[in-house]
Length: 445
Image 1 (cartoon, rainbow, N blue to C red):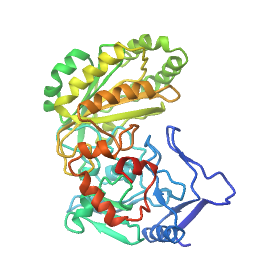
Image 2: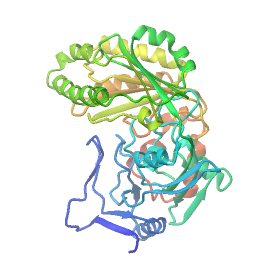
Image 3: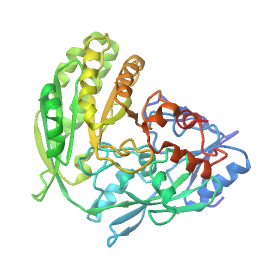
Image 4: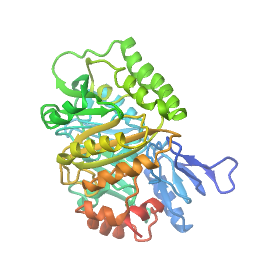
């Protein structure tokens, strides 16, 4: 079939198993295809419907949940890539859904353009990142999905639907962050702006100071985040703000030492030691929390927002009302210190302004995110269960692509527009062509 590459299939000659980045989730579909055009993807969905098979599209596997797994037809992203249109007058860029954030940012920078905000890695596809609610940190600028101004998707019937605030607006409102339940995204249009420079100021700070000054730090900085190291009173903070001064990137050697040697190489070794000998974790945490010294540098946005992440881990993240976040973090710290848990990964804290996307974790409220991690291969159940108990007591909403145990009954209580999303799904996919076990849990049967 023109535009479709069948990579594996029932009776294929090589293993069809797909695994995510962390290695904790896998799928063995009957067919795996890689369409290169919207028309080919639509034909893939129509053929799956004829065969009675469910369909899911995957990105690069950076979700920790089984949001994209299927035993039916798996659509891979690697041939549906590339920047399609740049409209400087409108301030937009249209990009194929399988394009990586890295490729998008590099092309935009070459054109003198940039996204307003992004997360801390850029390996994901644009569709995978936005569909699960990937976000960075920002006082005024929101998640990647909130920067979408138009999209194209293939419905369960195999038809192509274009959406924007003026064209199919009710679908557009939800499809920006649709967790794969409404259709398969084929193209996204983002708002962009002229390339700018960010100054990053990173420095250690005591836990008590960060907590007491959190509101002020968020208010005074365009982008503020920090990491708390369990078993210590130490945090590393990062403040990113726009500047009109010339860019002053980190010297190459300093950047390599901090971001590769210490943050990846040495940290991986420390995590491996902690996994083998948990009693060493508190001492390792005290050393790790002091390993990175204060530094200030400036560069184009994606080089400041993102960092290499080569140490593999499992993650749970909850979005809380911003006013609840520091109380929840203090409770998390008390819980860790009073337990026998040994946690080698720092807890990451970020913020986002309220938005209007039905399933956005920041829907209708200014938000702070608390992200808990464990090194891959380390038992995580006890830590995540205890942390989740704290997060849900504060009205937390779990990140759609990160580990959690919540179901539709809980989620309906923390998302004011949950029923609106379910009604739209019923209209677009009544046969649940895009369903799987994860969606049955979080959206209901």
